[in-house]
Amino acid sequence: MPTKYSFFVQPQVNKSTDTLFGYEVLLRKEDNGNWHLPEDFTELSIEKQVGLVEETAHILAKQNNKHRSLSFNLNKEQANDPLTLGAIIALKKRIEPVSLTIEFTDAMPLAKVKEYSLILHQYDIALVIDDVGTGSNTFDNIKHSLPYVDRIKFAMQNLRMSGNADKIPEYLSFWVHQAKKYCLDMVLEGVEDSKDQILAQKYGINIQQGYLYGKPSMP
Image: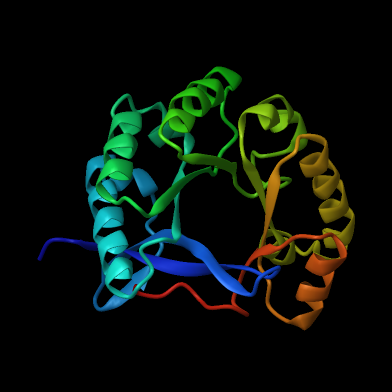
């Protein structure tokens, strides 16, 4: 049997208005009836992934979610694929009026960020740096890219999984400062309980994502 792939969706909410902001689409692979993260996100071509995003958008539209935003992740290898930008632009045209956001999961060379920023913004596609402060997306690696993006995402679960949960307030304060400095929106990911909501409120972060609002699931 051919390997099955699908995008699961996780809601993002805007707490300032208590409304659904959009969804992050998360690639999953099926083995023996169980869905899990692929070992390599490039094992499925960009063309096929974009097709799955389009299917997801149409499913959500039938659920009266057609005016929402979909966030689609790209790693460095995918961003360097010369076919990726064209596939994203064509996708945006096909899923109107759904908004589209691209999230860079890896630190990108400044020239690549500039290229994506210039082209995506012509088609009203937002650009986000995911997981700021962890992995390759350290401040030193991404600081020169911040003027070219629209939003940054801070993932509390990354610090929890690495045993650094106690550093969340310190790190979050730093990145909130950067967001204000560069006039960026900010998403707080990993919101699990009311304490996390209070932390987000303290720093004025309205767009939130996490298990408190819903786990990744089939659309």
